[in-house]
Image (tube, rainbow, N blue to C red):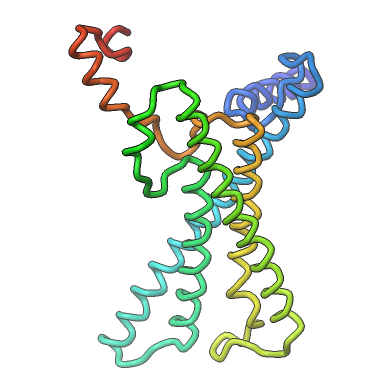
Length: 225
């Protein structure tokens, strides 16, 4: 019985290590590498949690909106709080989606100047760091001023009209997203996370490089495999 429990624990640990949710200390010999591994695992857990929250918020929001429409147009009635709660969920989902987009660099960007620079050159490296610094500034702004505004409302006695919840609840997603975005930006700037270390998306193709390879008769890596 004890051997079976140890086997299950070993399989569980191997599964968590494979999905980068636990640090395998045997792979790292330097303290700096071990700290970086712990930070990457922390980042994965944070994003797994906010992804669950975002999915739950979206699901509840869709159900409440459908329920409100059916009650209003079919039964000529409704639920008062069913309009206020989806608005709160939209705010929560939007800010969490913003943090998710920052993690995988999925936000809209203009790559004309970036693609014109030589791959691996100083100009591209500068633009990458400059982008991360700009995102970090916006994230810190959202974290600091979002937290300050939320704290200010926390001290006030106001409540939302339909649910009766405290007013500051509707502004909590701003500092939450600001914290996650700041954490990710610092990991990118410090080199703990690489730009090709993606959680929610796949690596985009560099079509200019693909055209150059076709001109020189070089096959793509996927076809070579």
